[in-house]
Image 1 (spheres, rainbow, N blue to C red):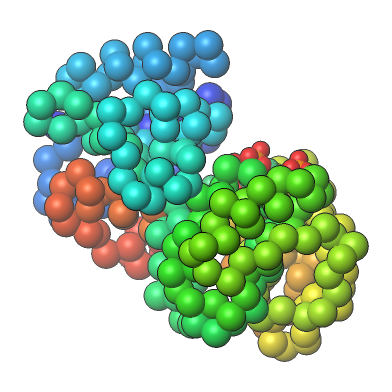
Image 2 (tube, rainbow, N blue to C red):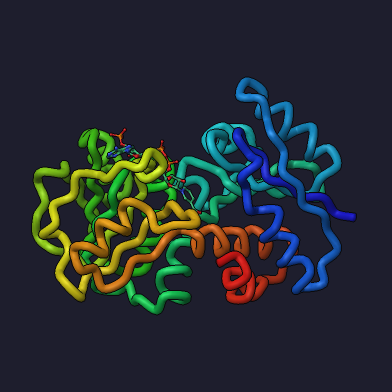
Amino acid sequence: MDRYAVIGNPISHSRSPLIHRMFAEQTGEQLTYEALLAPLDDFAGTLRGFLDQGCGVNVTVPFKEQAWQLVDSRTAAAELAGAVNTVQRLEDGRLLGDNTDGKGLVRDIQHNAGFDLRGKRILLVGAGGAARGVIQPLLEAMPAQLCVVNRTVEKAEQLAMLFRDRGPISAAGFDWIEESVDLIINATSASLDGELPPLAPSLISTGHTWCYDMMYGSEATVFNRWAARQGAARCLDGLGMLVEQAAEAFLLWRGVRPDTAPVLAALR
Ligand code: NDP
């Protein structure tokens, strides 16, 4: 049986095994998928140990940048993201790294939620690994403007510089921006601590602005509760992104893209 796994630390909360098992059942693919806890100081050993036998892995917090360094080759998406969330062992044993997070986000927003990104003004909040990973796919969707806003402004500016030849991207600090936008994407880890990035309420145009928090949980995130109070047209969480990035990984490994709708519905 072909073996796959997700590697992270912590990992017990991961929904990836459940998602991939549902994909396998739906598509009739014969595979196993497990969750592996890697020691913080030995991700490389865990990755190599599993891929001696295994066919592929997903990589999650905090190892995506290390995975980027360890693979033998990378897709264009992984190269630009600076992080790898999907590894495939090729027939010659070499490791190919991909990053499917950005594709997953864009597909969730455009395909699942039906929000066309073309011509829209987007605010991307945060400038960490998650933000970097989604910039290229967002720019490919042809927005009118993508502004990266971050607590540490220099990091937003570095990202805008990195992608400046790829589309209409700019950088800002929280107190520089007040004019309303069409979509706000929260790519900070603030929600994990129950905190809210210091966003001006005027960024949300009542009944018009959509809000997306990459975080998800059993309850609405702090960011989405704030957005709803400001009158956001819709508030989405990152569960759809999680399922869609998993489907892209499954496609890379198995050559078949599962139908994500029933899986997402089951998880909800
Ligand atoms: P990083 O640690 O790389 O970056 C964290 C970012 O959050 C930085 O920009 C940081 O700002 C900002 N930040 C943290 N706390 C606050 C705060 N209180 N106020 C304002 N800004 C804050 O994390 P990642 O980029 O890897 O992950 C970010 C989020 O994305 C996580 O919640 C993660 O779960 C989620 N995610 C979801 C996925 C999905 O499939 N749904 C996939 C990948 C990530 P500064 O630079 O100033 O420190």
